[in-house]
Length: 401
Ligand code: TTP
Ligand code: MG
Image 1 (cartoon, rainbow, N blue to C red):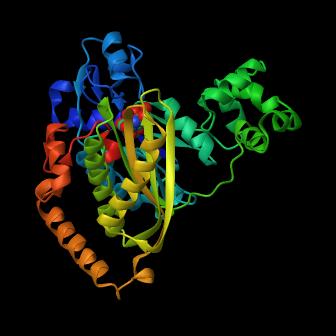
Image 2 (cartoon, rainbow, N blue to C red):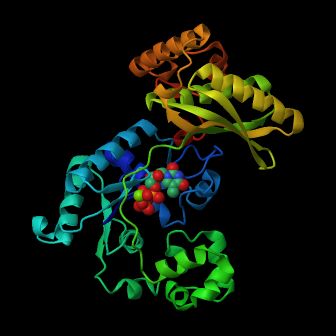
């Protein structure tokens, strides 16, 4: 079973403000801003609006749309409750992002009468407890279940009977197959392949010669064959935060302040997960959209805000000395995570002090909000980003929280 909430961010807003119901609504930010649409109501989609579209374009296509900034903590909370409901139905749950999940429901017919009945119950509980509508696809494997839920939207439920996977997929355009991005779609279209059915009849050798190893996967998926298990999530491999500036900048002090803030968010997340990292990455996107990432490995593994910041600044200075263009986006992240206990360098008194300071700040922030306590450097962000108790409101809230 694949379950996906309908117009998730927008639906949460509509639940809280019924005046928004039945109207074209966009979550993502003000139309004057430089962000993109995160979620569009189905009424807005009728005007061609979709996730990823620049807000300016969205407001041109649908001037009457209501644009909402959105608030990530609310969505995170709804997401957790959604996953908790699903976990009541089956222990084999694989969340994908915030608002969708696979559920292995093999053998559950006897409990609910049928899998179809089980899906109806799941939808009812989501509606009753969260006030949200979900779409559900049921099939023998993940790929067909996902396509089915997508096709059934909004508030849909589609079951593909065993043996009918291939004929179900056949008439759909190739872009409907998860994993086929823009580029693959264009390449297939250029080969005269437009539907999944046409893709499924393409000889495997030909597919392999055009797409290498992934040709084989394409072949299986197009034929509705997918024996991947429903798998619980693996622990995080990396943690990162990034934001776009409302105006491209060369101001080093602003860049450093933003880096400090994003680094503190990464550090807090890292410590909350009980992890340390061995590797730090800096990401910069320049005015012409060239994007670079720089990484630096440290030993012992670290989790302190100061180390994250110092290493980030070191990489930033190096990058800025090589490229003079204004910066459009900055991001910082950590990777190669290890369990916290394994690398403590407790002999070093300054490391111990730093650790105590970080923990004390974490406790204050958990209790009173992220900006309740701040380093001097990040205070200047007040002039650049609006401040909420949860933290600064950056241009890309879902990536920078
Ligand atoms: P989706 O499930 O892709 O979209 P949706 O729930 O808004 O609409 P539907 O499923 O009915 O087609 O993504 C879930 C949420 O993730 C979405 O509400 C907002 C967020 N999101 C982004 O922030 N940016 C994006 O580019 C996408 C696709 C989603
Ligand atoms: Mg959704």
